[in-house]
Image (tube, rainbow, N blue to C red; front, side):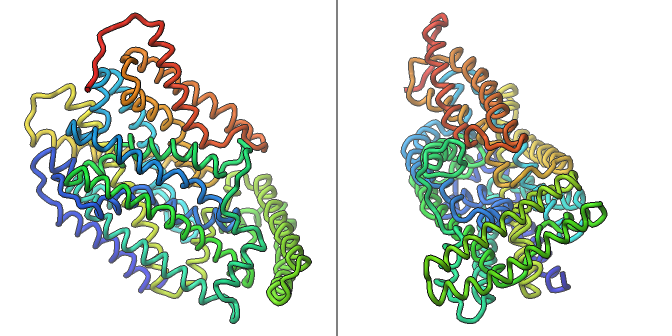
Length: 570
């Protein structure tokens, strides 16, 4: 990095922190601090909802996902528009009618305190872990490729977020996220157009898509019914819809974004805006990764994108074997150039088959390198998806733009983490602290909210400092969510639609379901993958399974438990 990159990076991040702190200082009431004074317009809500979900992991991992596996990951988001419509019609009117600060307040009105508390605790556990990961994800990547100290990076990112989130609460999060999304969109569009410019003369965008298609990267939809396949149309529509319903409808980090709306209509429009824009945005980010793949069909790429890998293996007995694999990849690269030229000129089945054969050889060579790394350097993570895009940025973009793209990554980390800390503090204050200490002043609860924001920020930093890279980071976040979200969504669906089910049945069913889902994840997903086998089911199915189990158990338990007085809101 040059001086201009440091100026762009530090200037961008400092502007966000200073602007957010100055613009939102002086919240005097809980309503102002937690709900932003209910002043948010629909476009602010939409961008804030989008920025909360689009963490640094999105911009680090998604292009690498597309580089290795193509566009199929976009199926993960197919259920999102449907979920936005359902939440706008069902969830938002109920929350606004009850004038709640958190989603979990409703559960006490419908059930009782213990059901509200257990659901809030489920949220705090999974979102607390998630907050640490959203700090850790960019920190570990940048520490590896730039040589920065990992612990120091975790602390710096965490402190920057804590400063303006503690100061301004929900309004600070919403205000800064508009600036952050502008930086993110600007940086990603710039990177995309530069990649197109860097392709060889005569390789237009349409030809680049042809090359990607010949390599199997442009298959967007998979209609197979293979339950072990992580990303298909059916996992997206069924598992994805359940995940999105729970995330946007019951996760306080998202609920708090649209509870700050001026009206029901503003909140609904904000969510629908997110539903319309989110899928195209993810498609575009994946397309950036596909274009990076096309770029490396004409330019040399490393055998493994994690720079620590080569450094580590050179100190082992397997160094010579790794070097041989590098030469093998270089030979494949040379053959690719002539095969692509022949394909573009003649577009025959034989020329396309040749490209596909070379793509298979390329993949086999990289897989062999990963196995070699796992054997020789088990402490160095062999999965390099998260390093692909950052490698391209650092080695190919002009000075100044490197700083901008790094600012994109860190801005995304800050925006997502700020929402999470804000929601964690709000839930802790409203659902745990205020519920048990209700006779305090507004100033007292604002102070307590700030203290809890600081505490959760410190916890997130500690989780980040002790975290460890796990396969692909964007999958890790979604796996953690899938373990909890289906159960939480089921509790809310029982509250909304199964009025005959009472609190004790729901509470017992919720605890039992969480145990069952963790066991399913461990035996059907985690253990098979550790053994090198495909999982028995894709992790997205956990959302639908968890939702179904808790509703089934609650209905069953309601039939056998002693009947007690029903609490409900009509």
